[in-house]
Amino acid sequence: KFGGTGLGLTISSKIVELYGGKLEVDSVEGEGSCFYFTIQLGVQNQPKKFLNEDKVKELPSLGGVRILLAEDNPINMMIAKSVLNKWGVALTEAVNGKVALDKYNAGEFDLLLLDLEMPEMDGFELLNEIRKTNTQIPAIAFTAALFENMLAHLVHKGFTYYVQKPFRQQDLHSKIAQYTAVRV
Image 1 (cartoon, rainbow, N blue to C red):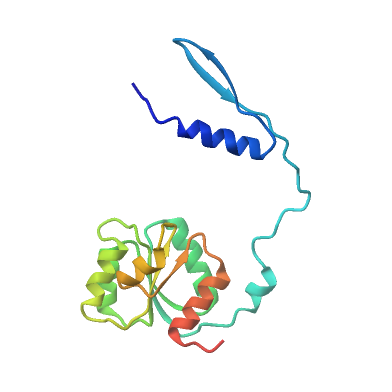
Image 2: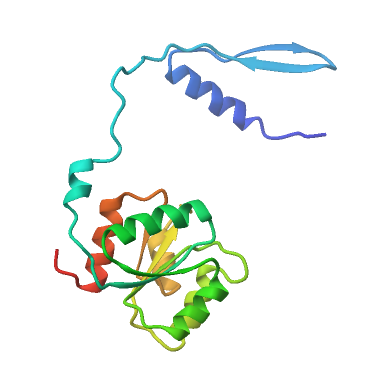
């Protein structure tokens, strides 16, 4: 009824073998199967730091840069807002593409930071509307998506670049400075 190619088990078995284990099965006809494995993993006593606090503290101000941030996720918005405010950015927030378009039409901005997947109007539709009147404003896709030939696809759709979520502060700062010609 729910047949497949069986490729999932083959891949799983190879991954378990790479870790020095063996994928095993207990099966009872008509009742189902239980797949399991045992592997040994080392424990690291010192957790890796994913954030270089010293480098983050050294990032210069982006004071005066006017950014329109379109982001529907309240947690992502809160984090981005906190970081951008710390750099002195003049930030305008929008919770979806329609609100962002209204705010864009009512203001002046140096850069767009746009989530791709939003209700009402997504980042692609929003940028398409903005590009009808402004082909020059830098637009950075602010996205958790990851797909093949991503940069080429986004540039084809009118974006200047992208920043992957969760983002590294240095990466976001670098792209904002680069595309707004802020001297850092």
